[in-house]
Length: 223
Image 1 (cartoon, rainbow, N blue to C red):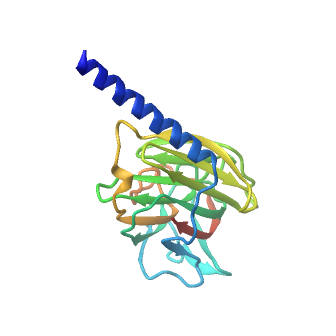
Image 2 (image 1 turned 90 degrees about the horizontal axis):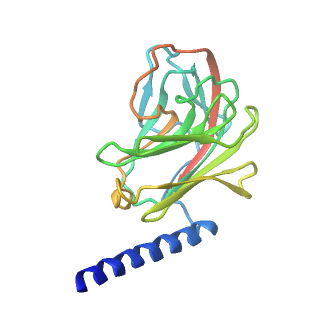
Image 3 (image 1 turned 135 degrees about the vertical axis):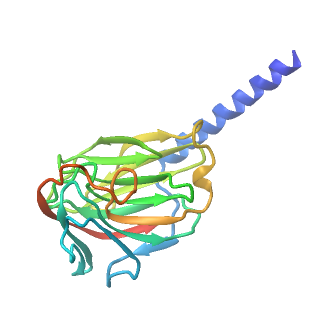
């Protein structure tokens, strides 16, 4: 009947859209200039969210990078108001001796309702993402070496990628917000969190603070 035919047409159109996005995400992004970037020539004038367990100077800028001195399972990050329509972001970081896993160094874009997308590194030598509350980890990085982590998305799907040189990228995994969060990431963001950002983007610590260590972030660029 007519109603069934309309439904089938909609399903067909949706599948075509999904396939088109999959194909587009296999290509490199057509990004030109970031809509926002942190290069850490100086410390940004913004909120510093640092656990009371950590040193008062736990966040500093030196040699063009954000230096973080903290306990592994505690928070220490910058919270920067940012209202942009984003399609992804890139972070360059180095784990060094930081012992954090779900509190590892990274960056997170948040939307006005508090949900967000975070990517970063873990002390077990893997990388991670938290997309609207769903955590995934894998891939590899070396603690003493710089690693670039990139996340980008279209209307229904997105990818998390890793580079060891900032030029050659490897896909780690794909995520899909087609049903639960459709359209959320097409609106303007509310803030960018950079540093040892917990999985939920909140200024909280684990019950066990973990070992003391260092990590650093060279830049974050939002596109």
